[in-house]
Image (cartoon, rainbow, N blue to C red; front, side, top):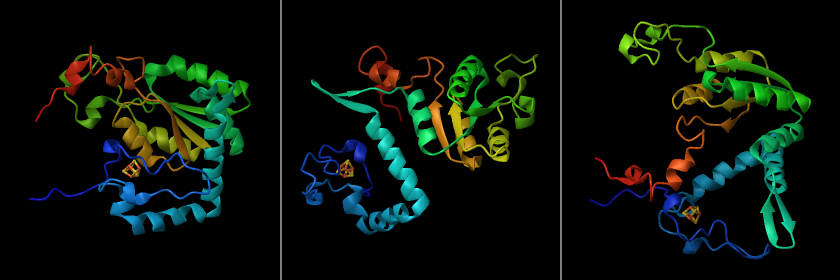
Length: 231
Ligand code: SF4
């Protein structure tokens, strides 16, 4: 049976969507691989692109691309990067006129939340922050068994509460919500319930200092078991 064709940009070696051509030339979509979304769903892409015509979206996307541009600089040796993500967050928030930022952080990164709050307040922002354990609701409320608690069966353990984190930031009318170190799954719920613009300053990785790509970079050497095929 023929395999269903679906977008697989991660497998592309052509990258005709980002060609090295002059500004007045036209990218050659014909050279794209058969699984290219530009070939598979051209009408869908065309219709979706119309979203950028909405004035508010257009301006937001324009500012985001200016921000992207400003993260590089041309120097005699070529091009180099210059802005860490925290600076990007500050600069982009200023571009958008955001004054009140909302920080949804993991209790395991409380120190980082404090430092980030210091940085953002020092740059003139108001920072509303909510810890993942907000509500102090026992994990048993989610149906967890005593032996499934990290603190041990005999100890209290508050459940992570990303829905309340999101709703508090929604209710506080923050201009931008910033996720800091929420776990996988908890972050998914936060994103689902967050109704204000949202970005991520860091994702949780307990082993790599919150740098999940470190495991990928080691996957052909010290962390080779990551690539082992499993059913
Ligand atoms: S959009 Fe098409 S050309 Fe671009 S990376 Fe995806 S498959 Fe390749």
